[in-house]
Image (cartoon, rainbow, N blue to C red; front, side):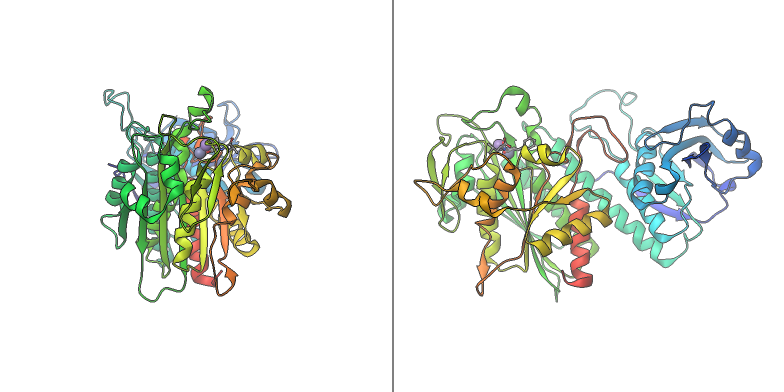
Length: 506
Ligand code: BES
Ligand code: MN
Ligand code: ZN
């Protein structure tokens, strides 16, 4: 079961000097003449000595630098925590605040309650600090049975100190931060859960469980239903596994919705490559290949909890890609949902097969927009590295997603789908082949998916495609509010996109 860890946010304008807490977080920037301790409301008498010894303490103020110190006289905190905000020019950016708060909270595992006194003069700054804190308060421990002493729990209570704490907009911002944090952290847990535990059937039940307390409807299509209704992509990919595929449809239908949004997510619970087997090293992280499905599920749940007036339907395309005597073979031809045939030249290009089914099924309901999210290609990382995701598709949707991502604090970069790539997918024996031009393979994959986006009234449904192959899973050290392994990237972008749809209709 994915249980949302207990986490609560509040804000206060109380005199910092009088706040009793376990840990008090202060900000440090990299000034032109060295590190500068930012004003926190503590008196000059209590922080003066600290401020002038930062260099000797080894504190530079750079981003991701977190230092714990004993309490100060004139403050009621057991521990003082310094978090770096980097250079002065960017120190007040919302994303800087998220990361600095996140890094501090992430480093305070084992501490229960924390007060953050980084300067937060506006509601937007309070929101950013709160979001960063919620995202930093995460650890995945489901299968670790070590003693309590060695496993420290994440921070469970955070108070943001700000002069605007009493403004009505602050409580809405804190609630939104809590909801976003819960959605991102639930996504991380699904991604982190090993494929021994998370496979199509258990993923579908986890989706039901997470949705239980919300006004959303969950329908699970099992392998019999998928076979009967012609979901050849999911069935073809799932054929090699002893654990059959699932399609999970999650619906949030508020009354009088402004728009209808369809979300489609890649849910490969383990990608071995199938008969086009991956080398061992390439398989190690392939439990993350269901991140797209976890993202669309949790984004929908967050949108529902926020009560946004748009109808959202999420399609989770879930299968395990395994090699076996029943697995699909390179050169097999299968029929996707809706009737189009695909020649499977490489069984490791499985994501686009299950997504073809999902995108076609989503299109049938005539949504205003289809967005799909997938850890689709290794080429995504070749193009943009491990921290920047790609967004492709129709220009208006693509650019609106990039704008939403920017506001959410996620790195998404608009990429094209060059026309010439389409013909590289031509097949001699089927309507289309599942692999084509390797150079720019991320865009080739997008050209494949585009073929399955439906149309009505003679117009293609506006569509956006998010390839999060690299950013979904952090193999490197934690940074900012980002932990190791599952990152939950794209949840916040989808929620921000939905909010923008409500406010400006795009
Ligand atoms: N799941 C992988 C893509 C991936 C690779 C995600 C690394 C995250 C990290 C996908 O199914 C895949 O194997 N794609 C192939 C496509 C190729 C056969 C055309 C790839 O990128 O090599
Ligand atoms: Mn693959
Ligand atoms: Zn895959």
